[in-house]
Amino acid sequence: MTTIAIRQATAGDSDQVAHVVRESWLASNANLLPPDTVQRLQHSDTMSRFAADNWRNIWVAEATKGDAQEVVGVVGMNPDGVIWMLYVLPGFQGCGVGSALYDLAICSLRQAGKRKAMLEVLAANENAVAFYRSRGWVQEGRRTEHIPGFRFTAVRMGLALT
Ligand SMILES: CC(C)(COP(=O)(O)OP(=O)(O)OC[C@H]1O[C@@H](n2cnc3c(N)ncnc32)[C@H](O)[C@@H]1OP(=O)(O)O)[C@@H](O)C(=O)NCCC(=O)NCCS
Image (cartoon, rainbow, N blue to C red; front, side):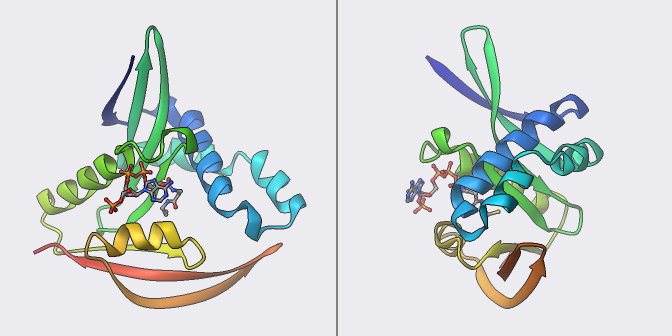
């Protein structure tokens, strides 16, 4: 039997956090990217380094099966009220992990006295946009950007926490 628990990340989790972000992001968005960009992202260590620098603002969902433990979901929020990532490994989606991490992020921002939460999500990621809309988030703007090999539109969303 697999059990899942949420805990604050540690500095040592950075590779596992990056693995979850990469696998989850690519499963949702790889079809938007040219193959060489997908390959580059699969081998990039940018997210590991970012997670290593920001572990204090990251929470993880960890699955335990027997003696084996694996990080299967991650959420990151900063003191300004921005939820800057929420990712669940594809094989663990649909089991409530994302909702549990999301609830923790909102609770933590409320406890910190934040009156508003903010995030950005790719416009093409309709599942994620629906996830947030069903939790009361409203669209506040859009922006389109180019990075090498990728042109994307992001939706900016907000949620009143009062
Ligand atoms: C969005 C995401 C975090 C949700 O996590 P999750 O663990 O799958 O979510 P849960 O099991 O808690 O279910 C949350 C909702 O998604 C729905 N859902 C879950 N898996 C689904 C699927 N495969 N297809 C359609 N809906 C699904 C659930 O029915 C539930 O609906 P509700 O909002 O009406 O309650 C996860 O799907 C994910 O990591 N997606 C890829 C990355 C991403 O888009 N991140 C968000 C942008 S940064």
